[in-house]
Length: 366
Image (cartoon, rainbow, N blue to C red; front, side, top):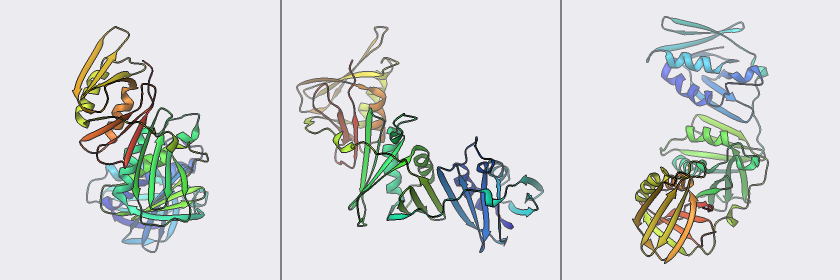
């Protein structure tokens, strides 16, 4: 096996693949990436048995073959080499030599036959959509995923595919984030799949806000995403996601319309004097005003008064200030609407002129 190509051409696929390789592995071969050279192309694969990333690049000078190479070392070598240098990789016995200018490196290998590869995903549905759109949906919702929750089905993101629409939903039990977009494809049946947290983070790092298109392939136990020269595959979380539509408050007719940046700045200031453990702030809504109050055990107090468009005479409700700030940070636009019902009900936050992104936050007793 042999291939040769410029440093810049090799660095990008290495960067995409090395992210899925865990630093601590149960199997030695999982610290390696699989390099396959065939038909003038080099295919690089990394996996941790949960997610798999395959990146392909054209090689000028090549000889067919396959082997596994230490992923992190190969990436670090390529990154440390100077711009414009040409990299020659050649397999000799059980070692791979990497030549670049006057630099020469010899790396240990493991057989390609030991490397676990996901081949067939039992395809049940396929849809295409703009890359920038899918990136936006994930960026608007990923922050609400649970982290190492015993309710394992919350440690990921729901993709809800229905006729002419795709939704991304995430919740940790205290707040929920939902973003949706229309899709052209007619689907045979509604599909709901849960992508694990690591898969979501890898996809967020992979996507760019360009004008490209990505293809989503829904399998029985996997999701596969194709984007140009990169193929990403993730196992799915085997569990039932909560009925998130039941969480979205109905009858929350008390509205507060306010500038998003103005509200964020006021919450950030009030948060300084909030309780460090519970991070609670109280929102007091009156006629054309919003009052934010924070206290802490040291008897310190912060009060922020803002002008707002309201249809409420008098309502007070407490929330975790971090959850409010996360939701506001993920919403687009200059104005937001907070929909409230009473002091014991959750709050729905959305953009003032669109319902594509919605955030629900549970109240906090103060």
